[in-house]
Image (cartoon, one colour):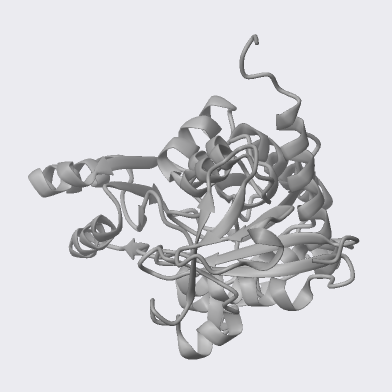
Length: 367
């Protein structure tokens, strides 16, 4: 390792349904990160949850992960006094597996939901992004909305159901949704992102199918009313003093911004900056920062809104580890606001180190 460079571990892949999104995000970061400032090591996590040292996202996209007996499988040593990676078979790693910071690019469960963050906290290592609380609140759409309501942020009407409720009494659930939400409505797994498992229901039969689909992915299902208006997204960057980007508008080719539209760049398009009045832009930026702080996010977050033709704003959700591909809204908004992609990576690394140092200043016992 070059003593003048920070050693960054790029962590990607994972067990979630957003595995492929993670590979694409990591590939973009790996290509753009400043090699004059950072030495970059890579660790890819396959869909079984096994960690492999030195695999490159571009190669995995093309050829898949190595077989278990062919790759260099590693694990994180949970020693707060000497955190490092070690190989399962005892082979040596560069710099004894030590590093300065982990840059997680893991979207969805087991990466964005606080579980990975808890592991990294136990090991006492610096990392990019939100901590356990911010990540878990940002992932769970039901609990996220509860926190937003506490802060008096404007939300569309919604209903939350447990999968067990739906399986035990589907007709009661359908009746409840029709009474409180009506049609059309959106049905979502509470703990997934990138539009995975999301459906739009226009009538009872579609609603039943949508609930069945969402129940495949999560034990908790959120049903939201449809807001007619512009789909607006704002990027947020920072820790205790976050800043907000210019807003962008999603112009979906279909009825909503599907998984395929987000990552294939087919049909749907992004309008940056969004065509909005100045007062609306300022309100969106202010509300995005409020939402970021409400869930106690850190580092980065993308906050999604609806703006009606009457300029009424509805907060939809926050993503604490948004897509970071070349066509993703988060970096494109910052580029339009004046922070290029490579500089954005620099800032996120600095914010991760800042947050780590802030935690080191806290005592955890009297002795």
